[in-house]
Image 1 (tube, one colour):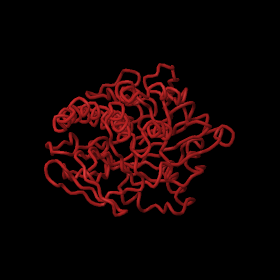
Image 2 (image 1 turned 120 degrees about the horizontal axis):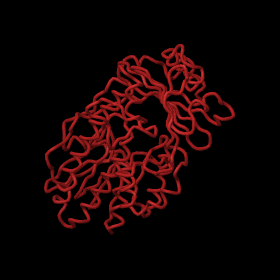
Image 3 (image 1 turned 45 degrees about the horizontal axis):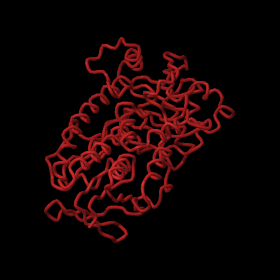
Length: 391
């Protein structure tokens, strides 16, 4: 039997495994990917001082984290469709939301774990409750593990969630379409200038072109479109030229430096339909199983997803360490505060998306930044600066 089984080697699951290791508690992480490098790990993340950074401190990795920060990445600007700058805030070096690359942060966590902690190539195909809080997990490779504690850290489409909840992710009506420009200062100078040193948002009601400067002159673009899922599915993304033309046509008349972030993309466009779990998603305590991160509280991108997952992992690890021998007490102590903070963050995420893509975009967002917003429920912990509406 494996005492603690974590499904999913994302940032949340790895943080949990690391905090447990710091406290001398063994765990095993099972991941569907064949290896750590089986797929790309997304772009930049802003790691917040009130949750993500606290998790890294609990993991004993804060100093190492400071060494992978992308200096200058907290800069943020808002443009209009003509490319005029409406709001521009430089990186002041304060460190409240420093930027790091997701892949580098994941590698930091992986390298901090004992060899063999992560078992690659283990895709969950079935989970069964055995009674007394024990569960059996079956993988596509034919292996099975029995565990006293099963933690679903396996994202939006979690295979562990059905043990606790009937909730399923629902499409929120907006999709992000992703691509990259490389060596942008030399090869795409107009777009590089428009983006600036950190995050750039060019927004109008219902849509926008967003980009973030990554290391080595990379511009990472996220096009946002409020469209039915069928409209997105109707684009032939297998035909890169046609797909770029179709998406760029939604921004006819916009500044060439902005539309070039789509048409000059040097990787095929990748659509990402945005889903959410019901607001305030929670469940009754079920012995021997719990969730963290998107598996527990999927919400629209707000800059809090990775931060919340890491904080969940750290808080769960601390609770297990504090209640050695009483897993149910640990899970109860972890879940109730997690339900509260995730509900609050989900409300903030909804408000943020209204500011970014609602009828008053982008002026509502700028008013929020400048302190003149009249919204009754402005984002608080999930401060929208730093390119944090990235998925």
